[in-house]
Image (cartoon, rainbow, N blue to C red; front, top):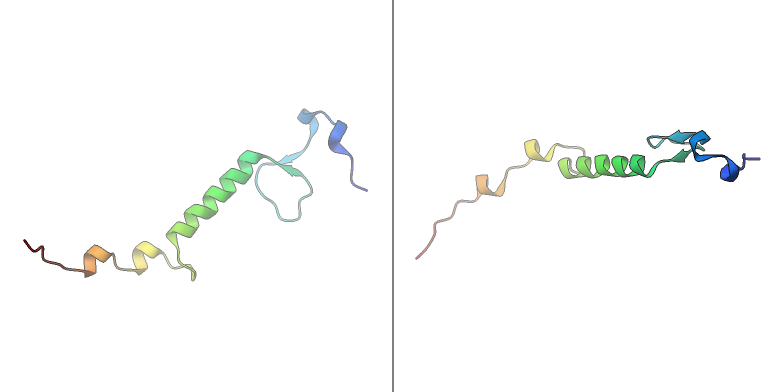
Length: 70
């Protein structure tokens, strides 16, 4: 049976400071926020296959040429 931590002072509770698979420890909200930020940053930099978007794909300005009309 898991230990009832509801009566243990907060200073004595063992916390994970980053997400750990299979851990039964509590995790801090800051650790969750940081992990989500890291995932979001990675998602914005890579496509579904893991390619670096800025190095794999051409920018629209590099491939579309237009002439302004009066």
